[in-house]
Length: 521
Image (tube, rainbow, N blue to C red; front, side):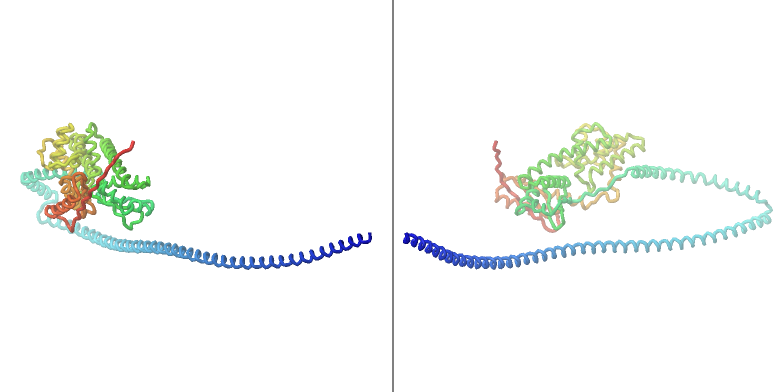
């Protein structure tokens, strides 16, 4: 029993000692872990501080760079505003100088007018004084004559009247012929008066057609799309329309250059549709240009119909109406042909009414007198004879036909309205600023240049661009080979040298393109 108890006591003691030793060992291990954890934590904290410092420096550098960039942009904007303000101030100063100069001139003129007025007043006073003195001398002279002649003033007047009557009768026959000549002169003056009144009653603006059209853009970024990769798009536009596109430093604008207003209008409308659509590539360009060309034909018909309606002309053939519409896009010596024809029609109507003739017939002839300048096909006839032929073909009145053909004396005048058409045509062309001979010569030279190239076999199109300094010839690939292209370019250049007179030099470019088109359905 005692041994059992002793064993229990020993076991309990051993257990206690083991527990105590375990706690000591656990405490030591825990202390080491805590120390390791503290070391690890301090290491993490130090690394975090290092990263934070690095990140802080990077953010400070980025902030400084952003600040510098914003500062530069602000300075640039301030500089631009300063330039604009200075330009505005310069313009204002120039206007002020101009106004001051005009004010000085007005003051000078006012002083001169005052001086003139004072001189006139003094002269009037002198004249009045002299007239009073003259009247006194005249009365004194009459009294002296009555004493010398022994006649009263009434008797002297009677004798003087009788002598003057006899003298008048003797001169009447001599003056009769002068009166007749004066009547002839008055008739000429009356004719001039009718012409002047006709001109004054017809108000017409003078429009000189230029060789360029400015196409405005929303931004300069669109210029890149119009030019295309390696200039493909702009070359396609120029080849399809025959218009030279000038893309320079002009902000938000492209210049369309061509002597033909119809071509410029087709190019302008095509560009407008391409830019609004956003799809700009060679195939799309050709499609849009062709569609625009067809729609412009409808527009030409609409212009002709509106014109004849506004002028009150009825029963005109549709082909003649279409030709009237085409006049909108043609010029004569720099003067818009449609405006010239409308003006001539109104002048003819007024002048015919003043002379007691048929104003409607005269207006009809005036509108159609230059119809031969817009034919569908070129002929050897002059525009007057060709216009008369067209008018006769489409059933116009013989008086109208004769007036058209005779307005340049190429046909005998058989009707009374013919000289009226001729006179009104000259009046319209003689207005100040209405015509320019140089422009007409330039346009004729351009047309001759294109017609020269079109005369060769295999040539499909020919466009004179860059004010006639370059001729682009588009040939049919099936008829002209690459070797033939070189030969054709040389021959055209040689013919231009021998047959035409031109300033500087002309570049001849022959373009040959082969296309194979199939449609999958």
